[in-house]
Image (cartoon, rainbow, N blue to C red; front, top):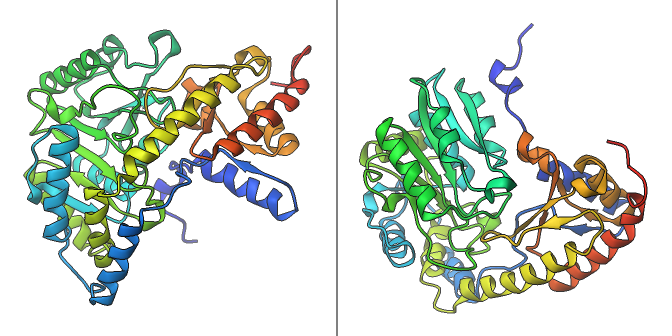
Length: 395
């Protein structure tokens, strides 16, 4: 009997999407639900972006177009990265894709052979180990621990490099911890990559969601131009989640490989969305700074309120829009806490183990929701906390 390819048995889904599906089922039964599980801004693109998409459609920009992306968008992206990250990239080294995940997947496919080892942060985005396994490579986690302020431990990373290590994945600001890697840490990671001749996949999707300081891309460090692939897109910084626009910035030979993969898979990204993306990058209406200011306000309120919940401890994230809550003080497992919150309080959140074993005593909440929703959520969480106060809850 014919069977599904073996790679499918080692790939995994995303906890956020499964929790979202369960929460939607409860809503369909008439339950009130506050969704804090998905990393989706509750904003929409500015009017000029919508107008640009409509104009592009009206002008017939709905055809096949350049495989790597229209030249006007790639040139605008190069200017945008110079302006916002102080990095110099050539437009021809940028390849558009229908979403960041596909950029991530294809970059890993282009660079990994079976048996290659991939260093990745734990806790981290679930796609890193899943894609690695699907490509018959070997995921090797390095821990992001509260003992180290969720920064990568350079000594641990160095100790895990072997002759089979091929790639190092970085994610700053990070999902789920909200950590922004320090200059010293990033410089150390870059030095390890150069020393051991590693590819570096720098996931910079949250680069604009930064609450203090200047963003430091991995591409800024010595020796990184020829070995770094940046993954970024429009979902988080421009609230364009459903538009499915991602891109990779890569050395020339990798960009050529990604274009070849595009030819053999999605052909090109929808033309009219690319014209709208040019307008988003220029951001003449100031939509991204305005959204960031609102996230900063929510962060301050939400972290303060969560720290009032018995058994919860939460550090304010330095970037992204997630509250990474240590729930060890509740006496319950993260899975049990999330079950109580979902079924009894109508608040959807993600158990930290969904992001790797190092997250097992944490819960992730997204604060990409309104102030009113966040206030209501913490009130519900406080009421539900009676379930774990005074006596241990099942682990």
